[in-house]
Image 1 (cartoon, helix red, strand yellow):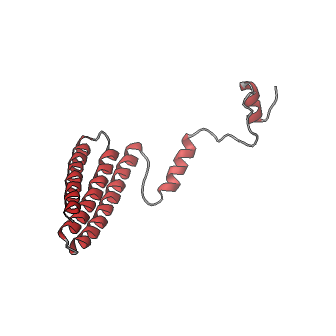
Image 2 (tube, helix red, strand yellow; image 1 turned 30 degrees about the horizontal axis):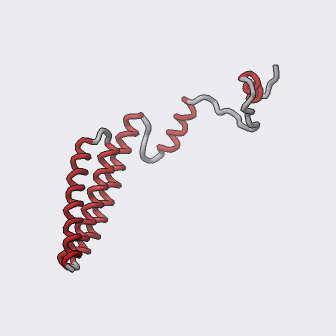
Image 3 (cartoon, rainbow, N blue to C red; image 1 turned 135 degrees about the vertical axis):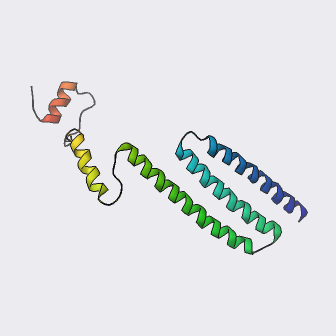
Length: 140
């Protein structure tokens, strides 16, 4: 039993070190996506740390704390992702919110080239002129 508790304590110290590394990584992370992933990693490792502490101390109430923390961690990552997505879309000039899909599709259709018909598959060995004739339906 003593070996089990020693292994559990060593694992807890190892995960604590990983949490510190993840905090440093979230501060350094070059993009916001890296930071959100690090926040999720920190939350997950903290949940594991609390669960292991529950086993180490033989306290059942810590499992309830672990479950509540898991819900809070999940919601925080969802909210951070939603905020980041809104900022990203705003920078790109794409609407988000009610009616955004219809507006974005209309905007996309007006700025893109007309769609190309892909009824007949293009041959891999066709010359560019033959491929264009096949796409437009005309022959030279």
